[in-house]
Length: 467
Image 1 (cartoon, rainbow, N blue to C red):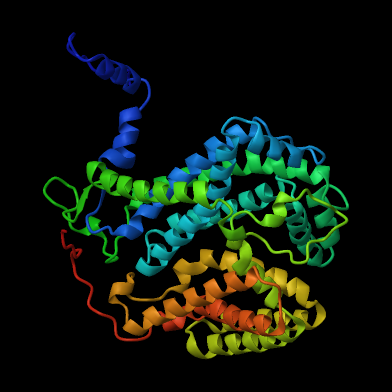
Image 2 (cartoon, one colour):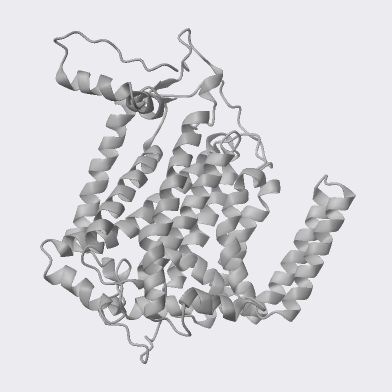
């Protein structure tokens, strides 16, 4: 396409002339209009739809505060803890930047968990938004990696021993486990080499991947359009101007909508930073204000709260639990054989895989299967678009008892998270095992329960009641 620069009147404002000059050389205005300014979104968004923009805000906060922290941080095992103390005590406003970054990490996961909850409730992972969901799951995995690598950097007691425990889990993998753990650490124990490579991943590698995934997530979203609480495709009903009748421009309507959410979030965020940055030891553990000591193990080692549901699943996998797992695998194979219309060849293949898994459970120890279940508990989210066979997307039009299934799943997830921060006991382990079965049952039985019951009729247009 030939170079074209729009002619403006001589008395046009300087800002308009500057924007015209840029637009002729770079599609700045086009990007703004395509991605937000003239992007039409369903008019019935509710408060659940503020968490996407809040996640973007927290991402910016984390990047900016991280840059300022790196200016003073020393990725050296003998200097790391002292450099964090220097930031807190001697760098002007360093304590604020550090607390913004540490609080922002927990805020990020709170927002992401709420964002994913909205996706579950309204079926935002269903066709044609499967790729948006997959990008979102990839973002979630990157955030977990980013948080894990960053957790070691303060070089406190919990940082050191938490990293030691998590890295040692890879040693449970047959054949390659010990070498893999050694490769991740860069040494036989968590040491300066580990700190340096974790620093590189936390500051450079994962943020680059994360930014690319966020861009892909947004581009995919604006390509197919946003979902809404009714689960109706607004693009199916267009007006004379070619825009959906049940959609409105994102700007200024959802700009104001999101700004209100930003104000509420920043109020809560600031209150936490200034009055309770440790949040009772959940955001910043008290043991992490003690320098790392390889000769003194803390009495109870637990990851940060946003990892604890998966950590509970790991701890719940005992030798006795593996026997229950064998029975569950056998029962699931039988259920597939009796209650699906798959071909005989596919059913036979699934039966062989199930039998092989049961045999391996006799051979490999419970620690290995705990690591497997912990990993699968996160990765299973990616299969959600193909597990949900409900004829409707939104929970609004599903049978009422479906809501109790979601509530049960949510309660089990919260209980797993709470148990993960407590020392294990026999009773707590039993509760965690029950919640683990509920967690996996929610997903693996979804092809059946999601299609059961009497569904309410879905309207052809979105339902909207102006305030």
